[in-house]
Length: 420
Image 1 (cartoon, rainbow, N blue to C red):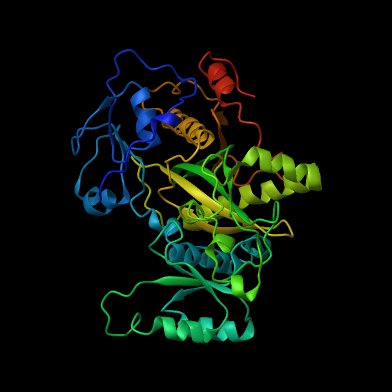
Image 2: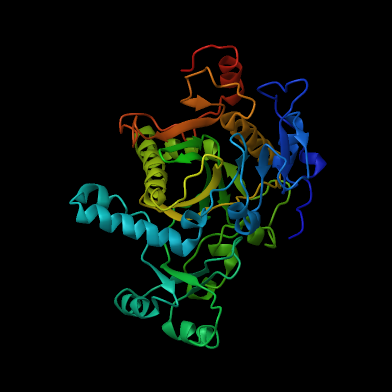
């Protein structure tokens, strides 16, 4: 796989750097992706290396994990940005499998209230394995469904349909029993009542950093963005196949005739939250964002026992979440390699700050060793730390989408002042 091109210089507007780079760093880094993460690592004043194993910090791609991770022995201090079987959360079919299993486990343990909270994903079936079950469900619950290949990203291969005959024709030649490598898909009931802003559909991109699965410890980044379609939403029959109406992926929307390259299709999460508070009031919106935080926590708990814990590993996930008109959040998917390229200056600034804070959390320079105040590090807020609190109190205000005071917080943190 070819390396991505480095971020465009017009977006290279790095925020103030905290903590300040150390004069003669001995931290060696290797970076597969030449995007914003590369810019952040360079600004960290670490030493770049192309060595296969002589590195302290490695931002790899997932193919390296498949090909090499099981065949190397890492030193105590080395850190890498994926868990061995990260795909248990990020492959669409395995994510649903793990969520369903967690729900059933809770039901067997008679934890019915908690089991009922696993209601944030629509009816979903893995194809071709569950094609028969899907057909039975479709006959009982017709309407619009959506097909997604499990191994692709950026909206590739996704389409909507309303008739079984459309699938019957489409699957011919794809799922023959004698085919050695069958492309797997999931099929889901399409959420046809999304919450709209300006008549347009959007979903949320939210960043989650997991530093350990055993015990589970994860941080949630305050800033994120809403990804909008260019076209107004409609469920008219003739528009079902129009991806500019139904799919929010930037890789699709940038080709729309009405795409504005100056402003892009993204809106800061902070702005969206303020808009919704103005329209619905603080309590309703805080309840919604609290549900989103709990949704993320429960998804992590669903894979905790299957992800292979390794002290060398951490993971930055990109969560895609849809809100419907009843203000209910739905988990669409989780990305193991969320895009770290930028299409606007504000996009660059958000991702640069987030990645800078991630490196501070990972703490290769051992600046946080004697500081126990870790509920907030830059723009990252502690989401869950098992042994202290599994789910946040329902009375606490959700920090997701709040003002990101990362620079001031880091300044205080590294002056030894207490966090609030």
